[in-house]
Length: 244
Image 1 (cartoon, rainbow, N blue to C red):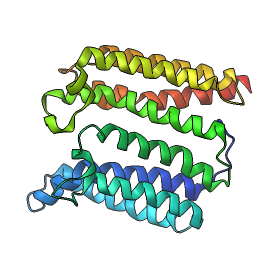
Image 2 (tube, one colour; image 1 turned 90 degrees about the vertical axis):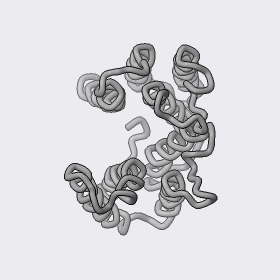
Image 3 (cartoon, rainbow, N blue to C red; image 1 turned 180 degrees about the vertical axis):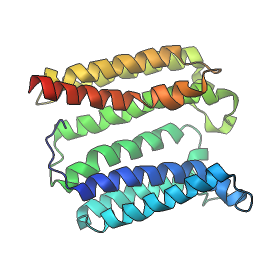
């Protein structure tokens, strides 16, 4: 929205259905592989839904340019390597300290670079700033999940809470939010129209982060934290409707 991209439905569909496919593959592939004969009804439903999303993703993918496909394939391969063990039964998720960075890199790349390249936009300074901002945003959004999973995660993952403790992890998250807002000031084109919703989104993330704890409501991270990007998007739509 910030760059007024003119995207075809095939690009939007590819990102949407690709995100569903990738998310479900990473989250449920191992479980489905180990228990394929005794899958719960809910997991079978998710599996069928994922196959449908995968098919729709392929349909949209067939309409993308070669340049866009090449970029998308790179992030797709990173997602694959994140979930599937290749070297000594290790995948990217099990390499200590990089789990959250890999996830942030993929989400930032798919939501920033893929649509920009699909619209033949030159990747200038503002684009790279947006990319790095998006990486930091995803990292901050993942911190409440890491705090929640602290009691379950293997020590080899070396997550932020494992390395720094919960209190220091929250402090790091707040610092990252400050960097996100600071980076906006380095853009060539600055507008309160986009900066104000970004500030509100960062405030929501800060509140979520400060209230995050190991024993949290089942819906705290999975619903409220994951819903922050949607709130951000709705605020942007509201600003466009009332102020443009």
